[in-house]
Length: 419
Image (cartoon, rainbow, N blue to C red):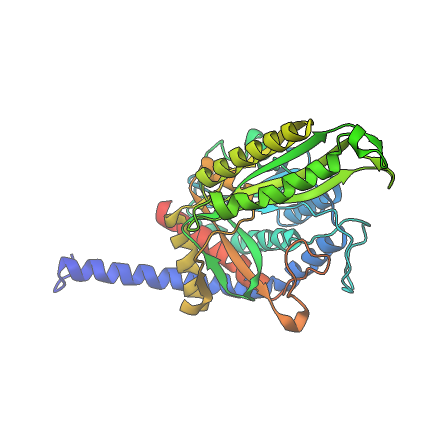
């Protein structure tokens, strides 16, 4: 012990020195995010101009691998078009992972951006283009501070987030979370509601459980002038849709959050023919499993009752079930402390309620603790005001500095404390 200093004073001094060291490193990470912002913008615009949908992300995958190769990071292809890359620091363990989704949506882009989609009927309308750019940006930053990392970083670029049951299942089956096992995983998702550069966090349920379904009504076709000789599947479908709207309003506790949406309906071929069959596609969302089960059972009762009453039959098929995304509070602390150290106390927004959207990042959290934060991208000056999945969707690219820095900083902080 240093002469003239008590044990408490020595410990306090060590803690202060540790805080200063971390603060210096986070300042370095912030500087590197600024340095690599231009490259992140280039990458985001390339991905935006060349969108590819689920498990068709061939050129996207090649571009990611090319960028990883430029960084001298070894990468492995998996799950058809997915990629995993590894950056080893001073030690092999523990392993901290970053995940990005890579797929686009089947949407015709209507923006006038100079780098708008060149692939007809395909658009990055959910911001996965910037997710890829930011995780690659985090890789650039972490590569530069490699000698200060007390462990290994694994970068997971996952296909098919938008299409049930999601590409996370295939990435996990291929080994993305093991050998050695991941001890912490972080992700992010842009948010067009939160002002650009701020982040949104929430402990516990962040995104809802999702249950997607297909419903086919089997009636009996006939002449439009003789409805009494037919079983009109269109009328039956409309009755089911209308009746189902009462489920959330009258069967779900108002303190819970749930939704039932019919997204498609298809039936009939001519104005004077009664359709014998109608197909519907829909989704059930809930912030807890109890609400999802209640909506599911109530829908089944309504479908059974209405089809029986009309002399029809039906087939109800569940095509996907995404678990709720539950953020680990400790993982959130790494994100929150990093963001506040980098950008101040007011940079973090605490989200009061779960989002009713689904996210298969939840599947990774079955294998390791982790958290996903929201990155604000809203900025009227650049037209970043439209919702996800809009054909006018855009983001504020300045926010990518924040996203990449918080990701890299959270990884550094975790490895520093657990390595």
